[in-house]
Image (cartoon, rainbow, N blue to C red; front, side, top):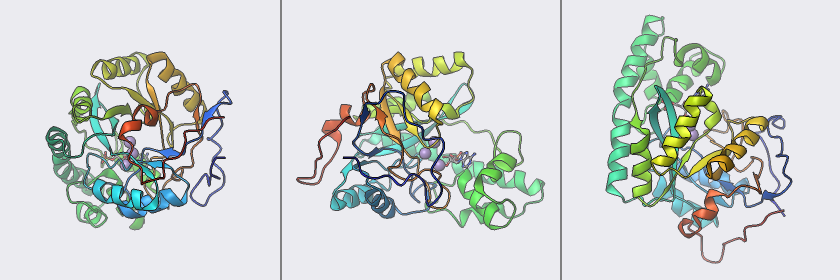
Amino acid sequence: MSVPRRPICGQAPNPRTTTSYNATVHLLNADLHSHSNVSDGTLSPQAVATRAKDQGVEVWALTDHDEIGGLTTARETALALGMGYLTGTEISVTFAGETVHIIGLGFDIHNPDLAAGLAATRSGRLQRAHAMAAGLAQSGIAGAFEGALHYVGNPELISRTHFARFLVDSGVCADTHSVFRRYLTQGHPGYVPHRWAGLGDAVRWITAAGGVAVIAHPARYRFTPTVEYALFTEFIAHGGRGVEVMTGSHSGAEQIRYADTALEFGLLASRGSDFHSPEESRVDLGALPDLPGRLKPVWEALADRVQWPAGARPQERSR
Ligand code: AMP
Ligand code: MN
Ligand code: MN
Ligand code: MN
């Protein structure tokens, strides 16, 4: 039996969570994409783990942006609660002039090259935040840097999300999505173009540390089919092995489309809510549809890297 799912954080069922046309699904409740206040989530790593467990998650990964600082607590809490655990992070890279997110799973947190790569990726954020605040000041919003800083849990990880929370709480916009639309995306006053790591660098940091690299929420990128094809082929050429099929960012049609993409490119498939906050996230931990049975789950390929509490390893089931 699968665990009953609460699809949304206290809201009506998500109309975008349609099931795949293939009735066979992988029933293990894996959620391999979530954020804590070590990046731009609002809950502590411990609280995210607890919520994951309450939501029926059986294998969990905390994937903070460009950070692994929450992982020791995440692991301890997950194992104490009886959940399976994989190490995780979500690395910002620049590809074809756009920001793309690469999830790393199952790596060694003590790998020095990965730690150095993540530190280098974080290092540009403070300067970018000052430039964002200057842009907002020019459009009449004063004090945004200090305002955003108030919401930051990790001084090395100031993100656009923290600016968005400040602008909502100070009454400029009704919700964070409107802030992104009006202020924080290309062509708007708080947007500052930023050059992140290269695709190949991020994939190599993850794989050299023994992990698997996964393209996060592919439908979010506004690439032409040609550039998207280049993203997938270059990602694989660098050693990337997976793609998120079930994510809080995908519509039902996009879930099916990227299931096909996974098969076309021979990629492992991942499932992760991208949970950030009970108030802001549309999809709760563990609440996405199951992965279609025709796909190979990334957590199966990483079976020897999943850490289980003694005696708690569930059987992978499918129907
Ligand atoms: P950053 O890494 O600082 O550029 O911030 C990126 C983060 O902003 C993402 O990880 C999301 O959490 C959040 N984000 C991006 N676009 C939106 C949006 N349209 N609405 C709400 N949050 C968004
Ligand atoms: Mn985020
Ligand atoms: Mn992302
Ligand atoms: Mn994310």
